[in-house]
Length: 462
Image (cartoon, rainbow, N blue to C red; front, side, top):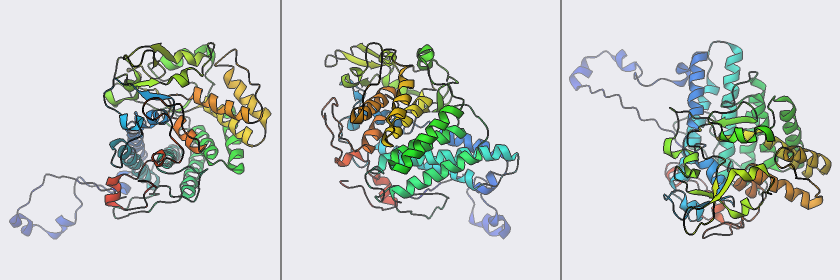
């Protein structure tokens, strides 16, 4: 891909003036053009650039809305109401096309964040070494996070074919570069290498709106779970358990469950990382809560299949209200988990609860059912006082995946989970109730606008 910046200086010079100027004048760089190596000279410069990188994640085509929304809508957790504003109906009906604006937005904005953090990683600023290492560690983690999202949406999963086409790896700025697609394995290797660098460099404990040491380790656990090999499952288990015991983040308990999801401001427990907006810096009407809130667009509704999974004693059932919206949706399953339009800290990317789910699934894959049951039971004790885990064998695995669906509903996890498990999507509402794993639209196309600039291998079917 080509990253091009067009800078308009508003300067007009006549031939006469130009001919009378000294040559040295033309050797000076434009006043609006600063090389990244010169722009990031100090610790403060790097922090400013890092804040700008985090701001990029707030885009409505990244975590501001699209990534968490599509992760449920394209699976079996969310549907678009028949009375809607026209948003995401193509994805809801699985008839989106190669030049879909949401697909292009994820691609462009993820690579824009990657470009920003690449400049931070390449910088050699002066200042406090501890702070600089922290900022660079966060930059490595942000790059890993963006590549993880890209490879999940634009490539078949690692569990399918590690040697298959992934996404281009761009690790430094080169305006003339037209990189080909790396393999899925190469992308995963880069992600895990970046996260290892992040874990090594970071020593501070920032707020949950920024990535800390144990967030990077938690993300490593998730990436290793997605790889699905015996070695990676062991790493996923060990890393998830380390985050549980060493991160200092308390598990969201039954006692503070309601406050966590209704609070206008972010809470200090449970969250390892969230994309945070505020009253000034936010995506406005394009924020995720507006899509779910009935005081906003209210287009996104929960599926009956998801709602019916929760028992009457499950606290998570209360995050969905049975109401009505249109004649065809009576009842309508209204989502309250992420629907407060004044709450800008609701886009959870990684929570401590997921570490228990990762540990449970990895333990099962390692033929350690007792460890799987222990981790799952610890989580369920804070969600459903009547819940017990009595399943064994394949039924235990299905219980773990079901609890993952229930716990992480409306956080964008379901679609990539079904992809990595290579499962058909069934029980959807609307015009496409079943989407086979082999359906080519289970993988986004490389956007046409990108292909026009940098032709590369297109995903099968597109």
